Image (cartoon, rainbow, N blue to C red; front, side, top):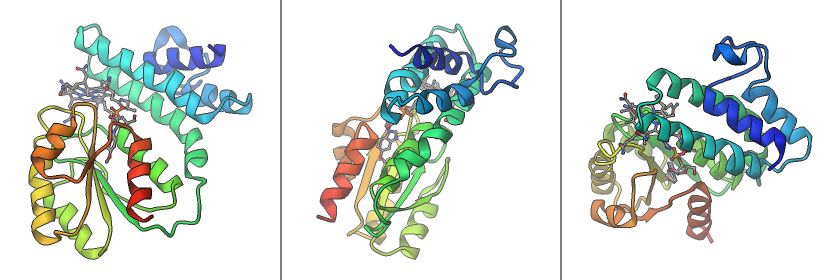
Length: 222
Ligand code: B1M
């Protein structure tokens, strides 16, 4: 693997945001995710490889260490910050799609859930696919989703959840949207989801990754 990608994965795993960041103390003065992501792109590494070879595996390792009680929430949060610093450099590449005329995509992480890295990636890539994005952020309830659909007729909704506890809240949100706007398509995603679950809650499509979301939306307007 490219040595910069290896180093980038390592700094994200350890929560080193940038060179000036004092955390973690053992990496003081070293380049962080901010500098290394820039260097990787400047060296010609493809943005998709930065994501799939360095950043996503690093977050998987963080999740594993958290499950094994080797790290705790503050460390997980520093890794998330480091990942976001790297993603800021990828954003222009993922967004440099067509003129945004395909429609409006409303996206948010559902009620009770604060994980936004996956949701942000989906938003970036869908935007790159030519859609106008309304990002409602995290911890979004059914009324906010529904109200935003009312204000944007014809829009498509994307729901993200990372917790087995909060994925249950998707059902309430889908129900509310479908009651008021039965024609509105709702796409769901997030690590704990399955297509069975999607079917059970009455959503229209499940995608395990941003690419699937982009493809689904492309088909909708084809
Ligand atoms: Co949390 N957390 N976390 N966490 N966290 C997980 C999800 C966990 C699996 C870790 C573990 O135990 N191994 C676990 C969930 C267990 C479960 O429910 N099964 C967990 C837990 C338990 C918790 C807390 C409860 C911990 C606590 O407080 N005791 C707490 C809950 C807070 C809350 O939400 N209410 C919590 C908190 C946090 C932080 C705030 C510290 C931080 C999030 C910061 C942030 O997002 N800004 C955090 C992090 C970083 C993680 C892990 C380590 C990484 C998540 C991530 O960003 N992954 C995570 C472990 C893991 O995932 N390996 C973990 C990278 C990202 C690119 O992937 O988000 O899966 P992902 O998105 C993917 C796909 O899922 C998909 O596309 C993306 C790109 O491929 N996708 C969609 C996502 N949304 C989509 C929508 C779509 C389509 C595809 O269409 C609309």
